[in-house]
Length: 422
Image 1 (cartoon, rainbow, N blue to C red):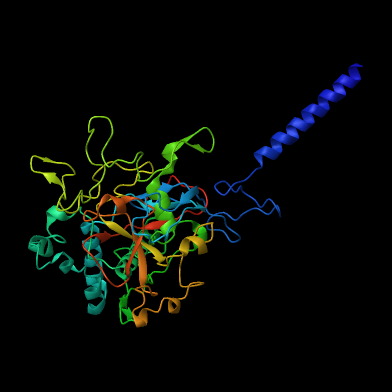
Image 2 (image 1 turned 180 degrees about the vertical axis):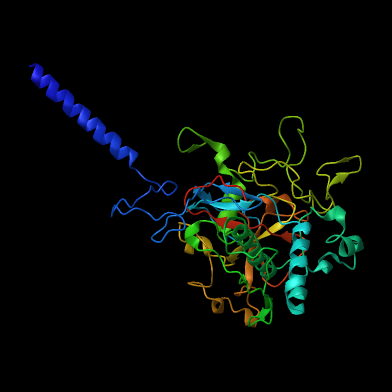
């Protein structure tokens, strides 16, 4: 009997040791171990010949970026469809995790961009990068101070840049990707040249628009190093809408949500419902005919036109001004039926696939829709509350600009979220 008990004990200890050993050998992307788990060959040490596996602490967030955890949500408008467009009917989709700027791109950010391209680009491209400040001009409105001052006067430096087309916003994303990754290569790798970088801009596309051709002269360090971060880009319509609603603040017990959201905050009202600032507006928008801010001495949203990019409280993802201030460009080409054509995983409309431009007959003035129309969302200082609902959508020509459209950048999330600071 003693021998049986002893045999069982030894077997238990052996199984425990085997289990513990197998657990300790479990590898991850962040901790791949010192040798291959399939061949047993040791990974080469740094500076030695052989297959090397770089240290990796996870993808860091880019400057000004906030991590947006992906998931399922109901895409579509929750407001009454007063325009009868029926172009964003509710549909359940899933969006993968990504990163997004916590604020809109501001005038100071665009001035930094202009400074860089003026040093390293063709005159043609520099001119194409200038925002259209005449978007403020109006024969029947005295907006001269904004035409002359809004972009460059220091008092406006942290206000959102406007007068920027969809094409210009994309060029900025390419430039920003190059600058940030070149800086990372200089800081963490051997690929960068000390003392700066050159940006060879200036090629033309079919529409005679000067477009940035971003090719770092020093070259990128290999992607296997994990030093680079993915490119900045405009968010997809689905990403933007998901991030704006910020539904993580409505959850309780597993996957239950207590309510939907018409706006990036709870409730159907535009005013703060409780707390110290009860009664104050939650966003910067046009409150009614001829009413952009309230009355002197008690201006409710404090801004007659745009507001600084950190104005008002952020939503549950930590994003500022996802309703009001300025509308924002998104990546998608506009089609009224995208909601029924979209894939239900990471939906996007890149082109007129399955909904060709010829079906709309713009050439014979039967529609405004063609392959140059891009979606913008969010409502602005010049819009009524209806357009502040994330599900509403409008469109504008990609080479056009407005005093009420700006943008922010996004970036894919690849692998584990990192803790490394840039």
